[in-house]
Image (cartoon, rainbow, N blue to C red):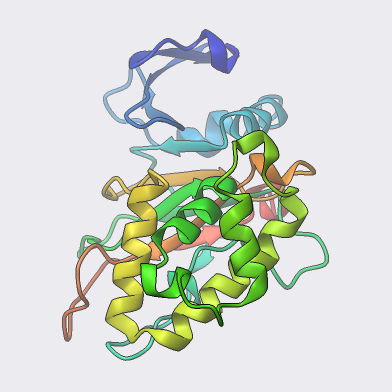
Length: 265
């Protein structure tokens, strides 16, 4: 397998298991794999080649190195995927609409999370925003309205974080403190904003963090680095409505799994 740094931008070929895969980099981070370059029907190349022995460990390491790999045109009904749950309404956001790592309640978070849009009758307009953990935390602080930042009664830890994250990146607080900072900002926004204002705030965070919010395509899987001993290299994601929620809107359903831990079952 070619090393990630050997893949030129924006389009190139990645050779795995004797097969050439068409690749591109449409965003500032992440690698998009279209499928075997010489196949008219790509089929289930994710399982048959990329996750098959002896390629599995090398491919999962590539996901970790790249932090996001998007596999398009994958035809699979592998039983290890499960439905993505979580409901939202016009008055209430689901937990998935906030930036998060998967497995927050687990003793050890999964190494990778894979989210997939299977082939189905209804397309999906709701984005999945993906961005580096550090960029998300910094963007959340930047996006806070001025009247919050100027409030002398603002939570002291948020006040300090605003000072710390205004410094050069090398002087930011340790990554181990970011979850606490993020949690306090999220609680503040949830308390002070109604649902649509909250969604608008996080759309601004998406923009400031330059998140990957490219539209979903049927048969697409996104594998992202969810947990690493160096938290600064991890990614976060969220369900991102690109416009106000419409009543009775329909969207295609996603499935997910923790590929490193849950596949093969």
